[in-house]
Amino acid sequence: MKKLFIFIFCGLLCVTTGCRKKQPSVVIDSGTTGELTWTLSSDGTLTISGTGEMPDYSHYYSPWNEYQDYITNVIIGDGIISIGSNAFLECKKINSVTISSSVISIGHEAFEGCSRLTSVTIPNSVTSIGNYAFSRCLGLTSITIGNSVESIGNNAFTHCRLTSITIPSSVISIGNNAFYECSVLRSVTIGNSVTNIGDFAFFGCKNLTSVTIPNSVISIGDGVFSFCSDLTSITIGNSVTSIGDYAFWYCSGLASVTIPNVVTSIGFWAFGNCNGLTSIDVDNSNTAYSSEDGVLFNKPKTALIQYPAGKTGTYTIPNSVTSIGEGAFVNCTSLASVTISNAVTSIRWWTFQGCSDLVEIINENSTPQTLVGDVFFNFNKYACTLRVPEASIEAYRKAEVWKDFGNIVAI
Image 1 (cartoon, rainbow, N blue to C red):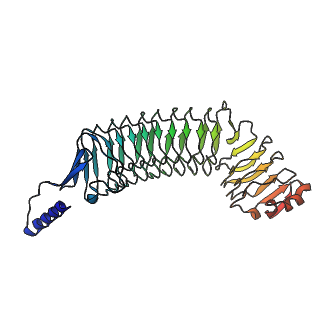
Image 2 (tube, helix red, strand yellow):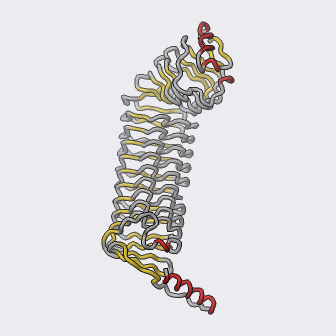
Image 3 (tube, rainbow, N blue to C red):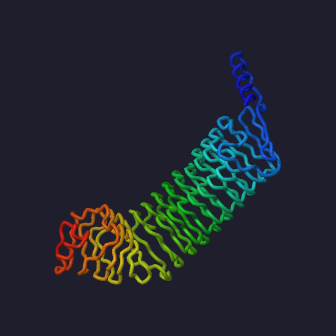
């Protein structure tokens, strides 16, 4: 630190004495980290050299920690095979990083919070990018990922300002929250070796317009594309077997989606609150799910899973249906009337949540169904007419929840 004070003092002396020549860059501090050496120059360049691994560091305890607000450029020299965890955590003045082609791994939180970093090229030698490696790099607009990277860690690029990203074909897994709330991200290319897209990987990427999930992907995690409000096109690869809870929650620009034949698991509210969605279509050879008129059912059509929130008008639930799933009609704001057949015995949580234009429910069941959970959450029962068999009017007027309808009349 003394050397830095000397440098600052000399700079001030130059100003006061009228120096006009640009001072040459000089080393103001140096040291070792493991078997490597480092030098810090007066122009803010930190150079790390030697052969071997850079150690992992505890938060804020790298050997150059005291210069966090001074380092502007980082050079990782040839021969270094790893960048240690927390190596440059919260070095907010760094605007450029050069990573040598000898580096194999980038540790957890290595560059987290480097808010002035704008562009990074990850060389082809790197095979793994650690958790939070570039998280909160708020100025990062460009990233090139080398074609040997196999895994992108959890939260690796959260809150970055990337506008496009190409995930090379070497990548096998994309971690949870990997690109969480990269709000200006418009374009994503997913390589054809990716098998797993982690939970909330692209959550809140509200400018993302189109995604093709390659045939290599087996699972789409929970909330992967939630709140991608500008997403208008999604192609789901033929190898996908599971789609997680809330996977496309609030994708209001999505108009249609096709479920491929091998999908055996669709999570809770996977397509809920997609206000522009008018059709969910299932491949006819799928053994777990089916669709009719754009509505999602289980294969035998005994359970109604999701009614697209963008469909308008009236709807009659098929006679084969015995249960209506959680949130099946959630925020179907343009649905005016729904007819529930007398075969339906189970209506579950939040089924009619937020159905603001629903003015009529025709319930053909002579016995009021026992409702599981708050079926009519955020729903004005006084503004909706409930039509039931004439002989059952009194039963509905006495039944829990059903009795709260302001107008119960005969079918």
